[in-house]
Image 1 (tube, rainbow, N blue to C red):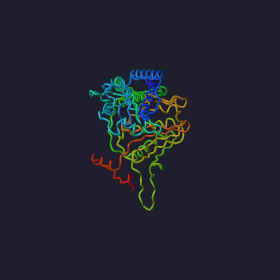
Image 2 (image 1 turned 45 degrees about the horizontal axis):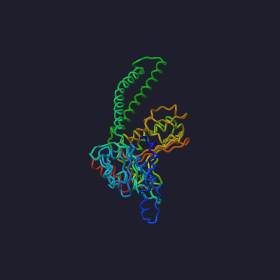
Image 3 (image 1 turned 90 degrees about the vertical axis):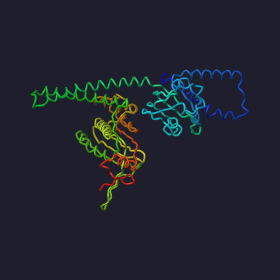
Length: 446
């Protein structure tokens, strides 16, 4: 059943569930309530039968739990997905029936268990990359959507979950990914050969050609390079989707990496008449580096993260290149800030901006903003998708804030390592170039 068709059904079921979980116990305490008439009773029975029929006919699993995490309602589809008999699940803890794991087979427990997240945060949880362990210990790829049920005071009194078996969809995506990977890999070889021959033809020491022929060959060479980039991006995106994207994470001091990368990238912006700046700190989160006099040292915050530095450079370079493409004047800003838990950095431009309706789709594969300001700018719609997949490798988040005519800012959040944790990890790997930080997450620079 399509999810859009489930909306009115879910509204009805959530309403019923809320009534069952929150209000029925209150009604039981009232002893002097009038009994319904015979006609009213028949209507109630009819509604119940109709609701039961609807509930049982939904093709996706639907589960209702109370405030203690006990299963109150469990439809037939949920029983098929989990391998449990519907009647055996009522009154049992949801964590016993619905066992979930990540793609590496690690079971979710405690605060990581999606149902527990709903109760602790009061927010909905949606997952598309989890696996459900059936009663027969089989792994089923599922899409999971859990919404909290709240009483009048905002207290979570239960939750309703929609579970969908997406094993076949994942298998189809895997086959498509294999095809794209094979095709992209095989096509890169002849494209590289064509590019090589074009380079030889344009080499004055090897061949003599007239001005018009040179112009044609240069255009052919540029098109070939673009084709090679497209094949590489297709290969990378396919690997990112099926978990084959190579990653070699290490302890990285993000501030030092961004500073060096900014120095390397600023020359590209200068060719387009744009300035580049690097900013560290935010008054709302951390103190900025302070200039001190009298021979004292400059103190700069330390921001450690466990990432693959090459992959992270790939993300920042992609965002930087995009900023240059869509900025005709002004500057590109690379900024860094954070708190005790998060390292946040961003790439900000003074370009044309992005329409609000396009913002939710920017990180989807092959999506491109289509308007007069961007139609002439090249691209394949894979760059931001790859960026998102890379950041998600390290449990991070990437998003954009933009306004037409006022530029765009792409933000990235990564889990921050404490100074002690980072130092311990560096020492365990016997890293020769260990930076010795102070105990307050700062780095002393002479």
